[in-house]
Amino acid sequence: MPVQGDNRLDAPKKWVFWTKIVILGILAIILGWDVIVANNPWRADSISEVTLWANLRSFTTPLFLGYVAGHLTWPGSKRNPVWVVFLFSAILLAIALTFDILTWTNVVSWSWIGFVRSWPVITFLPAYVLGRFCWPQVRG
Image 1: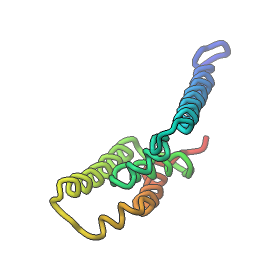
Image 2 (image 1 turned 60 degrees about the vertical axis):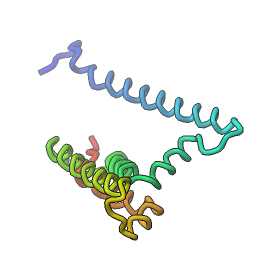
Image 3 (image 1 turned 180 degrees about the vertical axis):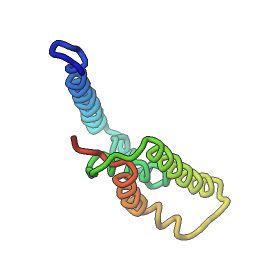
Image 4 (image 1 turned 135 degrees about the horizontal axis):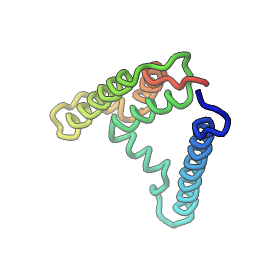
């Protein structure tokens, strides 16, 4: 049992503080970069434009953005074991990369793939739900 003055009592607060600093730093860098590229004469170089470009050309990007968004924004009531998170993440990555590789190499040319790629939200939303149930963020 930790006693007063023990560093183990202060460790969680320190980690929360530094995690918040890292998140704010990353957000500041992203915002600063978007302001810089928005003020140049070239187009299609902002973070949102590059992300949209990647979403329209790959199943992997919208799937993982949805998976992480479901984890970050939809709290659950119980935490899953780590192996469940890794297993579902690996399965999701394998499925997305399989579709990407099959379509990039023109092995298959299903007409519905073009439709799904033109609407990345079709792959984002199921991954969002999967991210919540496979990798829930537990309030605490």
